[in-house]
Length: 345
Image (cartoon, rainbow, N blue to C red; front, top):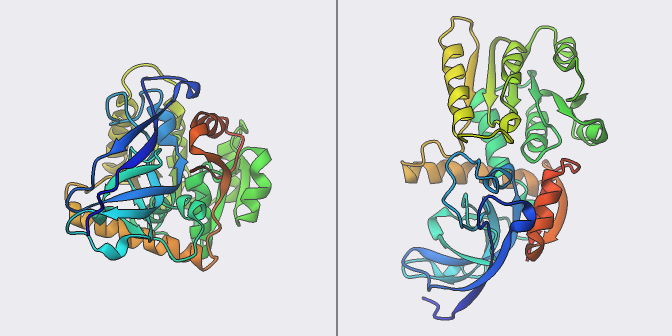
């Protein structure tokens, strides 16, 4: 049954390349859901590194300004368009949107929704949507590290990093994680051995902890340090690069750091050294929409199950109202918190 109730949505808008204080809050009436669409009321969304780059105009393929950011969302279906199962109304789902989720309500394709277990806290589920899928796919679909192996996770206190640590430990993998000293207790509590990422002898310390090399390095930093991450691998090991944080403040073409990184990875993979390098792209394969959706749903369902079973502990840095998105973005960019900053209604 199609709803005809007009929904007034509150949205946070990125008007241009601005400081966090430049975000704008607007309201608008949503159109009625079209065939295959639903209205999703936001219960929790979050601040990821993508939004931090988008507000600078530095994200690889972001839309033109102005737009509503928000990479993922957990929410409740309040209305269904033609052809959508009416039983979805009133139930909680998660979705990856890339943009658009910093809003009280949004229109979304019903096929993009993944059920959230009954009774699960929305903020807890939100912490593992993009972060959980990313960590799961990098560990299990790309690196394929087996029990008994050892990995290095750069930024082990972050949203993806803390999830990676927990997934690896659950799989019987030893973890060495970099973080600032203020987060070492938290990293240790997750089951990893912490190392100060600012230590001038960082890579020597990492090698000392795994003198035979490691099975995988997960590197979101990129830049000059990527070569040193590559050097930590044992024969048969895998480097998974999934970001270029080292170049986040660089001026110029936002695509250049990624293109240079891809060229370096291709060169390494051409060498007969028995090691592999990969650049993780969350959206790889999206042109085959049905297969992409199925893979995403399978992996997120696995991660949400582990949260529901208490295996994964969501790392929530703070819960901040949507209208205070500027403060949430500033907090996320301060690098003083562990886990994910969550926006709530």
